[in-house]
Image 1 (cartoon, rainbow, N blue to C red):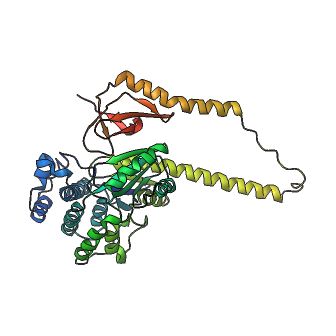
Image 2: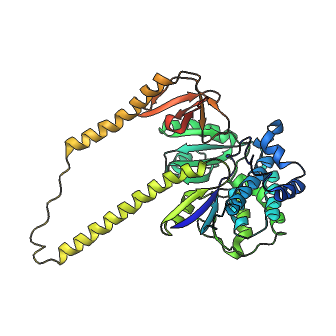
Image 3: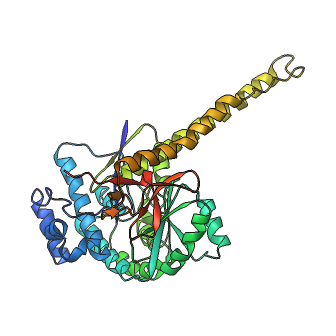
Amino acid sequence: MKKTYVFPGQGSQRKGMGETLFDEFPALTKKADKILGYSIKELCLENPNDQLNHTQYTQPALYVVNALSYQKKIKDGEKQPDFLAGHSLGEYNALQVSGVFSFESGLKLVKKRGELMSQAKNGGMAAVLNSSEEKILEILKNANLTTIDIANLNASSQIVISGLKEDIDKAHPFFEKADIMFIPLNTSGAFHSRYMKEAAAEFEKFVKKTRFYKPKIDVVANVTGKPYVHGNVAQHLIDQLSNSVRWSESMTYLLHQGEMEFEELGVGDVLTKLMGYIKRDYTKTVREQTGKKAETNQKKRSQAAPGSSKKAAKPVKKNKSVTKKVKQKKLSDPTKLVEQWNEVYPVGTRVISDFYENELETRSEAIILFGHRAAVYIKGYNGYFDLKEVKPVQRS
């Protein structure tokens, strides 16, 4: 069994993260304070002036907590992984663990990256659920919104788009009309899009001053979905700012490497949840390919068998009654989900979502949207969220 450590990126931050780690690793914490010019422990545990949600603070904070989480693993006797990967900002942690640069050099890169990205204004992003990249691009083209880019290919059921905020707002009704769930994200910049080219150009000047070493452990790159090699580290980090994060492709590459265990280090479990979707799609694809291969081999054997040309095999008839029952069951699921939700959770229920750090609040009862989707209206976000994408807050 091989093992991959994955590190989360922006969006996973929360007040109190790394609480037990700063005092356990005082030397690294002190180095971080010196580089950043402020107390990383205070930032993460107290979140003064809501700074954790500002990009220039979010990125260094996550980098440090992710790095200390790995140090804790090693200190506790865990062996090094076979592969590494990180989502956007998290990729810097993967590279640091692989020995491409030191903790200090990585933090300096992340500090500069966060400062440059925080300067991007008037941008917006949105998560598009249960749609393909091809379908999303088709909708944007038909809506004359080709100014919007694909930012994150997180899983087949979760893709993030990025562009000017006014264009993201214009896109919303086109996706609703196509019966596709569209969730605006709380960001100020159009990250991982063409609108980050200026920031990438500035970042390049800084990156070129950094020395990179050959990876000791394979790190799968966001921009290619394949492992880094020594000569392309700088360019990949520059390109990452304005190109898609190909997370699903990266994880699929790792699944192709044999039996693989994935463990998320750092803050939260966003990548762990995504891995569930990716594994499901991967298993489905493998089964389909195996089935097609078996069918092809069967045809070859039939054609080679004596007398096979005289009598063709009869096609297998589908059991219509069974098919009908399955379809009816699928259609009844969202109805039952809505009924169960409304029995337990009143309007005003506090919920959480993988797409937001803060708690949200429902503004309506759950309903059947588009005739088959269980959804609830969320206060302050002008839109319905799929019930499968929100979770009620449990109060003690």
